[in-house]
Image (cartoon, rainbow, N blue to C red):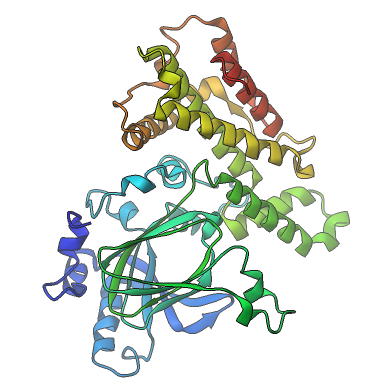
Length: 415
């Protein structure tokens, strides 16, 4: 982290946040700020203000014994800094965390683009999951598990945090209101995070975080093939919860399932359709890269290379999750999405998406850089089976499974 621009620009000589730098360079940005002393539903109350207004409040805190000038203890959270300032390279993602399907995808596509359920506010709130957090001593984040049950990492640019962790197998002891004495049985893990240290949070781990000093941190949420099943589990749970809330109007609703999906998207930021489209695009991109390796690598043992093995794991895990989706009754006899593979190959966003994935895996697998363009992918290949494979379209999980089986068979891999 020592070479990060953030660690130089954002920290004053005494090791504290350089608030003046933020006010001078980013003061006009509109951000979401949590009032740590006020509860709203299941979270802290959120306020919108400019960075300059937030800095003014922070400065007031430093001269007061009871919070800012208005008595509020404010914590700037979920600032989409990378999205707002793409040319200001504040940091580089550590190589351990580069296999980030979530943010790589959102750099090219909207997660949810159904006009029937899209809301204007979604454009910013779901634009990416790369955040800057800033808070004075005493600010905190309540106990929670991360969005989509994703992984997360949090890097302290300056300051100190106290973390409390609860494993997925323990969270019912805290949230089950019927278990009066269960809370004291829960096993908590604790740690203190110092400046220039990074915390990794696995999927499903609940955590509560307190700033014990004035702190700035950089935080990412992300998922990939290794925890994609956690994402589907949460979507399915949220779907059944949304469905249960309106079950009493099922008999009088013209499109009950459509309403369930719209409510799911509104509550969770993603619905069945969105998730299937994401899986289709990653399946196609991973297979194209895998096939590229199989036809361009001179080494006869290319299939045992770290990149080839990773791509194969990705494809097999996508298939496993898709098989679980296929068994969900809500999919049966429904064609809720149509992805034409041939048209997708010619789409500029998909071409860039594939190249971004190739660059990522070249870095994480220490592989020579792979450059290929899906739009020109077949110009040097005359295999009729391959061409036929990409003349298909995918409308549901069953067809995605069939595509994956045919694709793997084409490169001699047992599906």
